[in-house]
Length: 208
Image 1 (tube, helix red, strand yellow):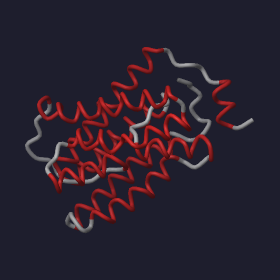
Image 2 (image 1 turned 135 degrees about the vertical axis):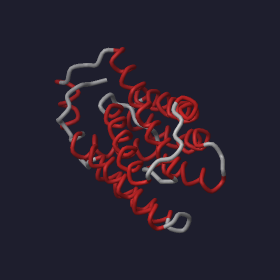
Image 3 (image 1 turned 90 degrees about the horizontal axis):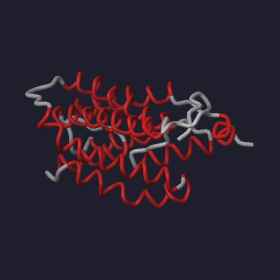
């Protein structure tokens, strides 16, 4: 019996309202982090990082880009993680797209120090993703692949995402100043360390 199967059999099942609260709070925290990154012209991880990079270069709204970039990954989510996980992830991606569009109207930020934005924004996103992961919800793209690798192959989701982030930020060197890329890397480290330390296989026993 695999470790993942053992957790599924022995873990306490989340109630429906607990999953809903985790999804709303998790996506809201991620959205606040993305807004901080957008204001400071920084990049974050995975599909969100790619969407931010495209927003900086094309001017297209982040929410539209983020939603579109994640569409191809739902096939993997359905085939390997189950339709429940895929449905929750689809909803979470939609919520982040809406929240990032609406948050600037709710929270007006005139200026933000880039290093603060990286650390605070990375912390917001890391904690938001942690809440989502513990309720078997991803944010599409790299999150889906990271959760699949952790649950089926024992590869830490945080460490895998950090490796992908380094590749994305290396590509950003052609579009952003070096200092912004290095600060973005610091934010990616904060985000993924939160996941790597707190989302170890078998540590959290709740099941959705």
